[in-house]
Length: 193
Ligand code: IMP
Image 1 (cartoon, rainbow, N blue to C red):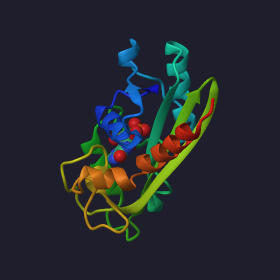
Image 2 (image 1 turned 90 degrees about the horizontal axis):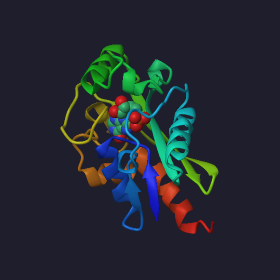
Image 3 (image 1 turned 90 degrees about the vertical axis):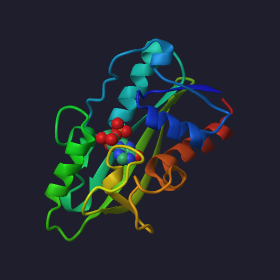
């Protein structure tokens, strides 16, 4: 089955492709001639995932899905949340985002946090939502060079290393995105159309 994954992030495409398996061919918007930024202007993860999927559907006519992820820190009232990508600056600057997060948690005892992913799927003209989360805590300093985004500061529950230190297979088995994509995969496998 061919699906457009509404992302320009190669890391995500690889992660999701590994989880979905060989039965699915994922195309990017660029593969379908859709270049430029995909709008994500809503104030919830659900709203952004739907906005991105609807945009790709409108411009390609193809079945597609989009995800939106937030890092939600308990002591910061769920921030940065839907603003995770633009926490410190207007652009995507993971180092600045992590630095601001660590600054805002300076001296804070409760460092619990979670990543939460929402996937919006548009299939045969209908919309479906899937959600995944992974709980953990924010480390004192960034560590590791794998993964992307906030991975160097996030230590998942049950582990002593960050997502950026753990092997990608471990992250892919337990991550927020893995849980949401696994739900998507279960749905697609049983889909009768
Ligand atoms: P997006 O919604 O997936 O674009 O992600 C929003 C923000 O969360 C971006 O700053 C990403 O770098 C970050 N992010 C998303 N997924 C992950 C992840 O798996 N690990 C670390 N950071 C992530």
